[in-house]
Length: 379
Image (tube, one colour):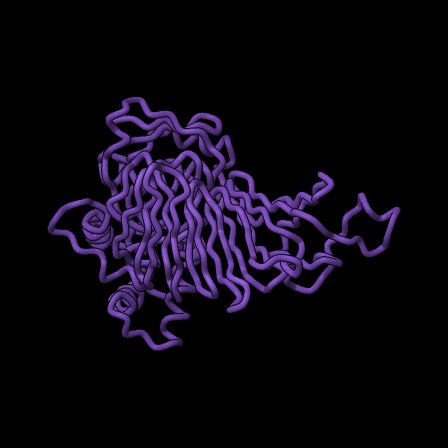
């Protein structure tokens, strides 16, 4: 696709006026953006992309980015990538040659992948394959989403088809994500550095109870006779059948539950004045010492599930925690004041960490230095 055609489709894509064929063509072109030759782009085009991208990233009362969110800010993401190309081709690059050589020497810090560990009730662990999309749980066997059976080598001597019972635990490391389909058909997507505890069968209980540490997106199978309960970081969520996201990392100050479909009841389990609230679609419950309900763009909360980072007036401290989990890196702030700086913008989770940091540097609010698997955040 030539650049004239790309710019035309960019406008149509941002306005939501693409046909299905045009949308597919545009997205295929975007996915291959970093692997194509940009030498034919003129300096004027690149400078324009830089200015437009800067407007998308900068936090300002005059900037309105919400209209792009329903499209996951795909058009803005393309501008960000064009801006990165621009900065690679200009003499005043944001990353020094020393930083770039260090990144190349590391062979880049790659994004996370599908990987998780399933721990059985007897303490034995099964490593879930990173070439599979997820795992299905039932009491007699475990199968990947493509139908192939998970083999538990530790149990081969006792049975060719191992039996799974009791309490199970699925956990993802930093830099890992995985989908789990529970015995009742509920689908759960685990974000990086997360853990879900659940029984191998819900048949013997009056409710379907699970425990979460970290972040997960749930699509709960409907069962009016047996409510689904999620316990996480001092709160309990009760549902019958719905879609919602829970962010309850222990290193976050609050737990956030965002509802996309159906209804859920949030109950606070800690504090002197426990309370319960019912969420409607498009609402988010922020649970700390108290529970605060606010209206949000629910798609922002599941950006990670859709392969994106969407930063909407988000603190640099929060952003760097997300990067730390997904890229399995440590973060050090040179100045504590940098943590409170607010940034906005969109970038693919499948970018390398260097590419993401270059995008953040375009705001000129912070700069970064990569050393080994550590990132230094500087003024």
